[in-house]
Length: 86
Image: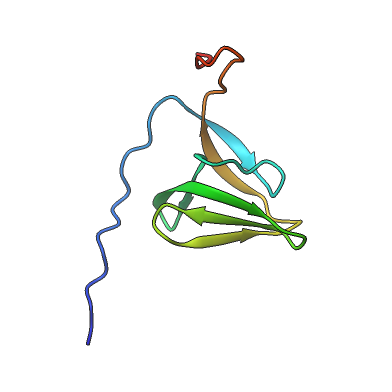
């Protein structure tokens, strides 16, 4: 039985995101990556001895190893008092 693919049209990314280099040491929850033209939000970062597993909001997983380097988008850093730096 063939099931139709879910609609994964990319929604617009917020304007306040900054571009960052995503590696196994810099990955954070809430970072966003674009894979196949679809923006995906990282909901969990699991660090292991072989690399880092990124659990994405859509239920997919992405593994980062030593040499993996991606471009990602991140909300502006938050200052120590909890407000976003703009």
